[in-house]
Image (tube, rainbow, N blue to C red; front, side, top):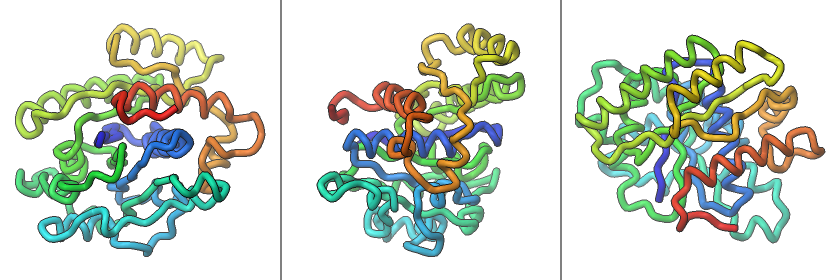
Length: 268
């Protein structure tokens, strides 16, 4: 089971959008997936077509981490219901719902023992190939809890000055955190989101990212798509959106997912 935190220390770069795109790719490929929504805004929960108030939410589970098992409290994503009956038989996309209650743990001074709460919840869970943790855009308690339980951190960035600088800071933070608290943790790479082919600034920043991150930059770059907000507003998986307008975007998420999953977890 691969546990992957999707992170950015800068808000507004589309971190939750990338989480949902990867979840859509995993569902499309038959990868058994759990999404844990640790962002108190709970946008991933809404985007995955799960009603708030259903299931035991992430903050409550973290409080009960010594006696709870996360797989006992997951909710099935409504995306599964959009598939045909034959596909639904083997489809697994579950969600640990988010809510503002999670903010209880989002403190900068969180104790090391509290960082282990998500890890405790996931101990013994083996029914998934992939766990995606949608983190808040900060390095406070919830992100530390996610990183302590994860094998890798996937960073999301935009081709802009502040996002590039923020990604460099996050890379340093991951290295320091791994050395002190999570020796198993590595960087999965950097996904560039919302790139515009007609922007000289974006072109310049992409070249800068290639120089700074070299082999950590995951390709393809995710291009800005005018239909993406409509897809998210409809709480729909990009791989099942009708028409050809987002086909390239779906293929991009397929390629990125392929690079993130261990070979044994991939299905054709």
